[in-house]
Length: 397
Image (cartoon, rainbow, N blue to C red; front, top):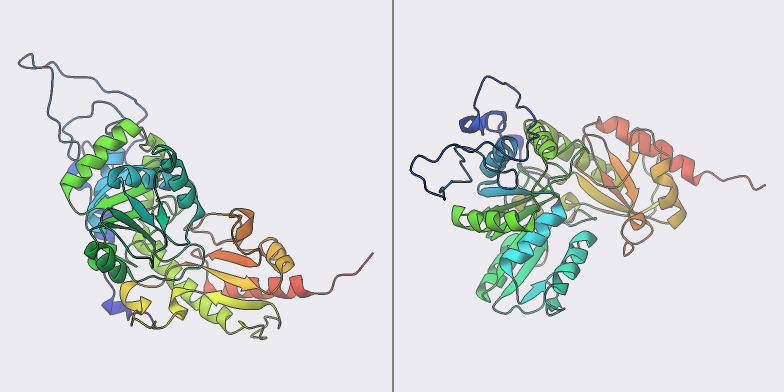
């Protein structure tokens, strides 16, 4: 079971609503969308050509490639709720590429996970003429290695032991990045377990409404943030003005959305798990579900790792099921009323997809489920009806 509610780390609405108050200027309650690309420059008082601006706390804005009011405010809120220094990017993959530029690893240790990150690594390798060996997470590490750990894992939602890999790579003289997209605050805090950098696709839970693209990197020190800021300026991968505004708006309700999604997903995964192995269960026909993956179903592994301690604020709201037949996986997403047949995750609406339609390496029987904020019993009934429909014998013409 997950920790009891009164033991969970608090992601407060007060912090999400007022975490950027020191950057608020003027009488507006909701900030305006900044559409300007550049800003009026003041007359220099002493004729100097350079001005030393603190871009984390800009007294004024110069050019939108550096800062603008709403993106700076979103980064301030993200920094506070992630216990570090956050910087935003145009997408999760843009943030992934920026992380590679920052670390400039000798090798990358990565196993499984989001196929988009693997493709971004392939693109980055081209800038180094292909000179970037890849190894597995459980291979031996060397100085200069970057351990790329995604947890919980896309698409299955299984958790990996951050502390184990942090200790392992640091002992060898390498660095650890944790992709925590599947477990935003208050579910998981990777810095507590030893990571050097945290990555999020802000498109997902931080955005939360399926209407923006965003990436986020968080580092533990301001000095590291300044390096990332300089790189972003000249990579040109900052968020747009509208996306920044949408992100800030969405962050205000993170504490309401994510715990609800987490609780519902855990209940749904537990319910579905009773039908695993082809069992008939509570209206789910026999012979449909082979397996259910979810961090809440993992238990304790041979090293003593139990995900419930790392996922201290609740379970991940996205997970996968393996059906017994590819045709079932093809039909299921299009046989539902409340689940939307679409890729992505983290939105207020529940999404479902046959994962192989977007990830060629996925088992064609695997179906990924992103749980929204609908009621659990309604989602159960929706799936129950759909499972019955897709297994119903079809007349032959």
